[in-house]
Amino acid sequence: MDREALESGARRILLGNLRQGRADWNGKEYAFVCPALRSYPFQWFWDSCFHSMALIHLDKELAKAELATLLSAALPSGFIPHMIFWELEKRDDFLSHNLVGRTSPYYSSTMQPPIIAYAVERVYQATGDEGFLRNAVPTLKAYYRWLRENRDPDDDGLIAILQPEESGIDCSPKYDDALHLEELTNQGFIRELKKLYQAYEPIRGDDRRILQADLFNVEDVLVNSIYVFGLRSLVRLMASVGEDGSEFAKEADRSRDALISKCWDEEAGAFFDLSGVAERPVKVITISSLMPLILEDLPGELVRRLVEGLLTSPDHFWLPYPLPSVSASEPKFMPGNPRGFIWRGPTWMNTNWFLSHALRRHGYHELADHIVGASHRLIESGGFREYYNPYNGEPYGARDFGWSTIVLDM
Ligand code: GLC
Image (cartoon, rainbow, N blue to C red; front, side, top):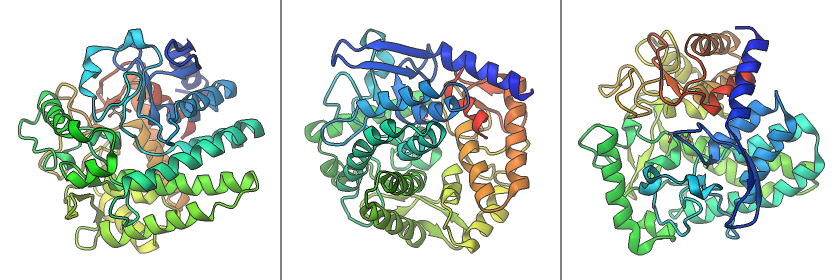
């Protein structure tokens, strides 16, 4: 597939999934790309960030609108929801399970990986639009402050998630124990989530108390790597508008140090999440174990061990279509698609985007090229789908899936 064909395929999806209008419930205008028209008809936080970085290559005005819409959903507290139901009439029963402390019928009260400052930085670099930047910075500052103040009750520099969907890698086997998941199916997963939400009901809206209740409290490596990555962008954006971002630079360093000192497992040569107030390491090797690679200043020795020991090992992540969402050596690795039980083996474009760029930053250009080449082939043979079999490239999940167009930015 040449660049032109790839761009026209991506344009068809991004424009086809574009939703525009004025919301009845808050009077605000919106313009965003939904992940998939049928299965995901709303605005999702990290999807929108990926869409905006694909749109940079196709339509810069829409790239700005995508992020401006997401930023406009910020609450006075600074929080930005993981799902926003701009078009209420489309709200479907399948979403009724997402009730975690929900304080509004218009958006979820959960978060998603905080990549937004990086997306704003990329869109600003692509457009040079000072007005866009100046509008975004105060909202971003409030958002990252909200995360620090509400999601790090033990004040160790690592933010915590209170249910698995907050990491964006929903059903990853690394959450099975914390969720007490016994029936390994999507239905089993939803059942356990519902129980969790019921238990949260009396303290809904108070995330610090929810985390301290210790029913699900995971200091997640993927989320914290993206947190540090986002904070670093925020510091640069603040410098661009003449503000001092040292408050956030300090926080980024503190979180990076905590990731290394608390989540790195020297013996396994991998990063592991910490579960519960007691911070038990969750020794399951998933795509998350590699995510600290996105940090430019990860110590060289850790970079080398992750790349040589895991990423390029055929026992773990170096499969015909890398990078699988779970290491192939894990007993729970499922390369196929067992009825929407997602993030348990297949390869996704957004994590390939993160890690191919990360490899380049650390000087591994050939490995990055290999991942990009395999990603192109997946799209060429299977279309822009939600995820793919890492052995044979078989496509699965939603069709015309928004963030798979991020391949344009690889
Ligand atoms: C699934 C994914 C999540 C994504 C959402 C919309 O829930 O796990 O990361 O944001 O779909 O695409």
